[in-house]
Structure formats: C-alpha cells, structure tokens
Image (tube, rainbow, N blue to C red; front, top):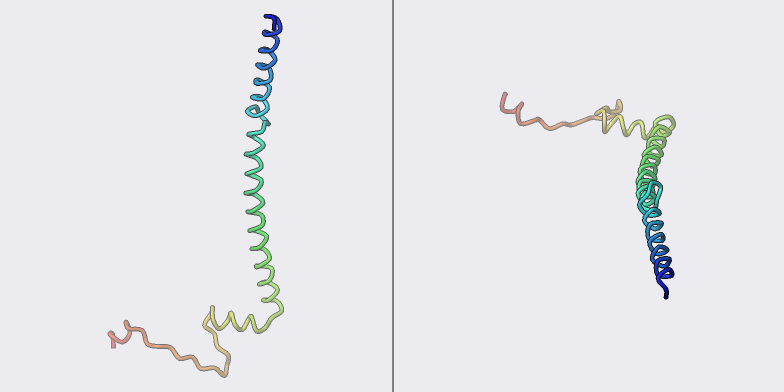
Length: 100
C-alpha cells in the first residue's frame, strides 16, 4: 500500500466516524429520536389513564341520570339519607357519654 492509499484509507475511516457521530449525537439524531420515543410512550400511557377515568365518569353520569337504584344507594351511603319507611340506629359517641 502506498502512502497516498494509506492517507486516503485513513481519511475515509475518519469521515465515516465523523458521519456516524453526527448521525447519533446531532440534533434530530438517533439519541434525540430515542428520547422522543420514550416521551411519546409516557404521553400515550397518560392519555390511556385519562381515557379510562373519562369512561368511569361518563358511566357514573349515565347512572345518575337513569338508574334510580344507584341514586338511592348514593343518598343512603354518602349523604346519610333514608327512605320514609326506614329507621336508622346510631351508636352514641364516647364524647357525648362522658358529658352526660
């Protein structure tokens, strides 16, 4: 191999290394692509979570509009209401017993 061939060979290898470096580390290179793909996966997971929450809320709204048994259940358990023919028994709290 002559000196000119050696110089051309090493310049070719150097150029290839520089091009590979630019492909991997430049703006819009492979590293940026990987970062963006990870971010896309996180955003998609968040969107799926929000969609599930929206479906749950839509189901509850539909139940509140159309399901009388669900409305009665909420009235009893969340707002401590009773139907006219029901009796509610509550235990006395300890604080009231000491005061008496």
